[in-house]
Amino acid sequence: MKKKHYLALALAGAVCLTACSGGSSGSAGSQAPAANTGAVGENKAGQGTQTAPESGGGDEAIKVSMMVATKATQGDWADYWVIKHIARELGVQFEVDQVTQDAWSEKKNLAFASGDLPMVFLNDLTDTELATYGSQGLILPLEDYITRENMPNFFAVLDQEEYSGLLSSLYFPDGHIYAIRGINGAQREYAKSRFFINEAWCKALGFEKLPENLDQFYDYLVAVRDNDANGNGDATDEIPLGGSYSEDGTDYYDNFIPILTAFGYVSRTYQTDDTGKVVYVPEQDNYKEFLKYMNRLYTEGLLDPEYFTQTADQRKAKEASNLCGAFTDYASYLNITDPAVFLQFRGLKPMTSRFNSQRMWPAKDIVYDGAMVLTNKVTDEATIKKLLSVIDWCYSEEGTYATMIGPRIGQDPEFPEYGWELMETDFGTEQRKWTYDEKAYETSSAYIDFHCTPGDNYFPFAQTADRCLKNSITMEVYENESTAKTLRLTYDIMNNVFDYLKVDWPDSMKLTAEEADELSLIETDLSSYKQTMESKMIIGDLDIDGTWDEFVSGLHSRNLDRYLEILQQAYDRWSSNK
Image (cartoon, rainbow, N blue to C red; front, side, top):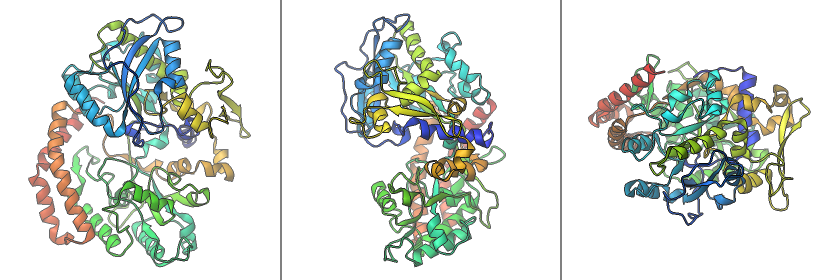
């Protein structure tokens, strides 16, 4: 990946995501919890006036049907300030069909199958779906409308060197753009996984420093197993390494990754090597050694015995009860509510082993945030341009802050006294401060989430690094003990793994619909076989050395060679167009 900024700038960009957003996040892509709100609005998908006024102010807004997957905390989107603001200032009234996360896949597929589509989808369509439905004419290609004249704010972002490749990343192999995505310039978010170890336990157990390699990590886990590390009087309830075995594509909860990197890999499936060759990691020799290490942890009681069977809720409950000596999660505070406990957990530098001396950590090549997709229910050019003007506004500084964190003080005509403003800090920088109805909302985050905006990962805003710097936190803040505690996650990521980031597979790469279909068919069989075999080898049901040749042969008998061939041609195409 390209590291365009010095550490202080990268830190500032990373800080903005947490310090400015108020914790808002949404969409399936951000692992939002399942929603329990129903669909709202009486208009059916695809219906609505499509006469676009030249501007929003004072003109009657056009009505645009939109379908979106919502999270549990959200009520009626029509009540959000940002939806009203877009209607009032930009002339687009979104009539939102809110779909619960558990019903999203079924309703989305039904909409495409029946042709009863909304005019707009907001995020939550995969690249495979975009390629498939775009080739069928159900999703509109947008590239002809993406011009400097139509989208000046969008191109102002592209003119920044670090985002110059964004436009090309939106193109599909057939030459069309089917979604305009937002971007997240917070460097912290380029790290795909987060791994935490209890520093207080480590010190109490006699270790002078945190583990730097797998041998030291093993010694720490043994010490946790054999002692009452959490001090509750029970020397048997500690779980040295917590987690759960999951193949759901989630980056943050994969306990394989922090150990697998010590064997020289940053993916559990496929990645490219230094020459650009696509390799399937589970058939590599070092992966066999990785499985042996995991088998050792499991058989010696160092890995959660329910690792292969427990649910996410069970995993979270163990973290919350302070039973785990180490675990992976988005943040240590996500399930542990007591600051005195979650601040004990620190990030590690990538570990090494006798099989690999190079530190590495999995990374994204680009971080998208939100997206807007237009369907064939938008039938006139004026409405297309009107909707792209909304996207362009999202890319402006005003639009980014509005969709991410809500109104400045004075922007909300219903509550002009509420909103955010920039305040000077003791460190010579500016930080946002929220004023809100403290009787109605317990925190500023609640005010943002329930009144202002659905938050991150819905509208395609542009959280660029320079925008974060305008109210960034300097290194002095990190060196201050009290403020460093609130920024521990960012500090640990930027100081421990940022210099070792390695892109396993480019997020900006697109497959054709045909490639995606064929890969999906092969992957279903391949993944099922891999999961079954590697779990049995780790548990000890199968001897690893005695089974290895059979395992590799089984992978190839399930069309692994064709699988790699498709991935290689897609990667070569992407690489040649960079």
